[in-house]
Image 1 (tube, rainbow, N blue to C red):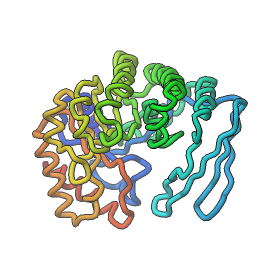
Image 2: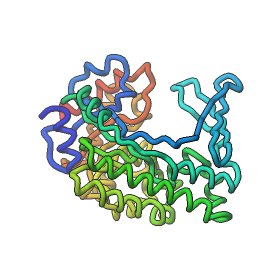
Image 3: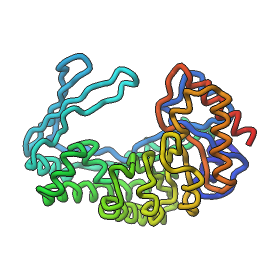
Image 4: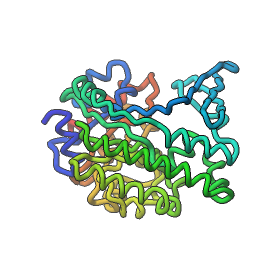
Length: 340
């Protein structure tokens, strides 16, 4: 099997000739492309979204700090972002939504957005990666995740769901309708894998929120893409023990970026027992990359052993690796998998 075939077969829940090993293209360290058996995961968007009359500008307000201005026909919003020096990641210091009336602005921005399919993105990504990896179609986060991560922050959202639920629910509904259209486009596209980039952790999306806001979304989106032969892959890389049973009840076929201990709190063996019909596409625990190669290989073998030879198992890298150990760690994982 080619690397692409190995990954797709595993994610369909079928047996492969070896455990697939993948890495997000943007995280691949220098020299990583030469590692035997390592496949790339390339993401591409199935559509572009743009709201006429909405303009976002940015200005520097200090070292590594910027202020962004969102000018719309319905009002103006601002946010402040800091760029950390390690990996260049953006950290929102002040969110777009600062007051209850700001939800109405975001709702209009979302509802008035024009969505245009971009089939060439998937096609070009597939041509680039060939049989050396897989392409995953980028779609929007679940509305609840999207709202607190991209627009208001978790504290603001928690208060406003109590104090002004109608304003919050209006935005969530607008995002849901937009996401459904994106899923319909994804279902019609050439993509084989559909990415739900949620970053789920049970410490935020506990059983209550999961059942109310996330599970219905997953059910509806699976109804759209599964009949088209697509595999929705939900990015759940956090502490999943509190919502283990809730995840089991969803029709999601692939739990992507699942992170076992020492970084997560649910082992591969526990997850495999709880979700026997779901494929596990792991994130190799990031802290282990800092270990010596022998320890990295030992951890890799242990993860494979916990999977117990089940079909539907793959190991990936979905988090940044320190540059000083990146290639060394990926080589150690690949060697261990070649021996399993």
